[in-house]
Image (cartoon, rainbow over all chains, first blue to last red; front, side, top):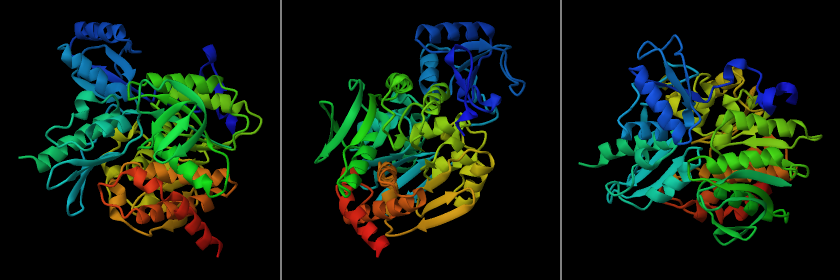
Amino acid sequence: MFNFFKKTDAGKVSGGNKNRLQSDHGILVFEHTSEVIQAEKMLKTSGWDVRVMGPPPEIQTGCDLVILFPLIEQLEIVRLLTSRSNAPLQVVPVTDPLLEPVSLFQEKDFGDYLMVRAANMKITVDKQTRIIVNVSGGGCPDVPWLAGEMVGKSLADAPDPLEIGHTLCGYALGLAFKEMKTQCLP
Amino acid sequence: MLAIAGTVPDNDFGLAEGRVSIETDHLYMDGSIIPVNRGTPALLGAAIQTLTVFGQDPVFGFLAGDTGPGHGSRQLYEYLVNTSSFSDIHTLVFHYLQPDTDWHNRVMFTLQDMEKKPILIADAGFMYAAKMSGAAPLYDLFTPDAGELAFLADENAPHPFYTRGFILHTDNPVKDLVARAYAHENAARYLLVKGAKDYVMNREGELSCVDGPSHEAMEAIGGTGDTLTGIVCALISTGMDIPDAAFAAARANRVAGQLASPTPATGIDEIIRHIPRAVETVLHQINQ
């Protein structure tokens, strides 16, 4: 059973499906090559493991270079580039450049409480006080930390996961938080 | 022995391995005190509380501090690749770690070299990495919730955040999503699907379903999935068959919730303290 894994060069290990080698990476698309070069420099200086490559055929926009990056860290990487006025045109997963971030929200009304779910993340608020009473779901390490920062605070005062989160779970929680604010705040 | 690898939401925690014990609402490990809250600490707390029923030794932990940047997770991955502490482990659980397929595969390669493979369970971030590595069939049990099951069922999604809407939609029956996950080799040998109804499933279909006691509020409480994973891994480490352990754990987690009289604002620590009584009750009912 375990022969599934094979040793490769430099002690690295690869799974059975070659196409999955970079399955947890994403692609940053920019309009001009100069922006790609600038972004690569910014990200490498900040310690990110990124590299420049040619775009896959599915990507129709942007210039003829893209940046490959660890997808789980999309939220933090895009935040950094945006803060330095070099936001990408598009961010897509390597597995399927046509995939889009979750845009489907599910709500559950518990009477005194409202829960909003985005992908694997859920946030629950006391409808009367607008205090965040729980955060659940997710699997990335920033989720328990974000929950600790948000639970017990009002929707108006709680930190935005889109600003302080690090991972795609944090990103999903940020979208659920945004949707909850749309539902509950004037 | 049961061992659990995961993170605690504190960047100053560093890296530690050792036996973990619980006292009131805190975990004790190698001089460190960890609040029992959602995430891996909740899983550890639930597992330890379950094992008190059997009078067994404390759980073994491999833990790193990480609030999201991933540095602690990568330190832990590297530690696991080089550790010699896997040899006495019967059941090994991987939990909240930054998903990273390359590091995941290195850890699996270490396990591959072992004479006797432990029972492997993955949940949360490590389950995401297992799926994206194409290594899901190497695991004995995954414990996804509804959103995570949709991710397993979507062969293209690299993370639940990118699950396609037509798969994520709540109208999709669990059985269909499970079948799709197995069709693309993105599921473990057994699945314990957490939700309004908990399903124990394998490639052949449904093995059992638990729908009571039912408290809608449990879905909103952060950490109820972690406690379920904690109970099931503890039961498996006592020698129970995986499907039996999954069924009993699903029942016990619900009973523990019921004993806490939950609302959507209930904290997970309030449920964890009822786990020993809940496990005793359920095992007694099953053995009657």
